[in-house]
Amino acid sequence: MNFLTDLQKRRDYHRTLRELRRLPLDVALDLDIYPGDAKELASRAVYGR
View: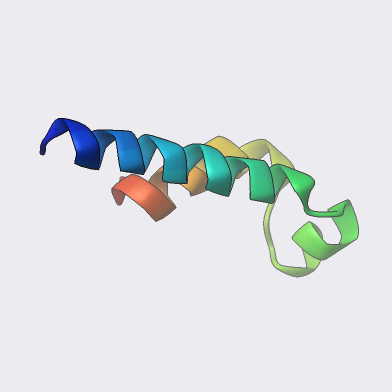
């Protein structure tokens, strides 16, 4: 990977994490998203891990 790709993925990770954290609790739970898993979910969504 090159620097620009890494930078873009980092930006995407933080954007995804921010959006997951902004979900109202009832919506997150309806989607089977536990708020404590936001970092792991964002990482898997962006980096595939």
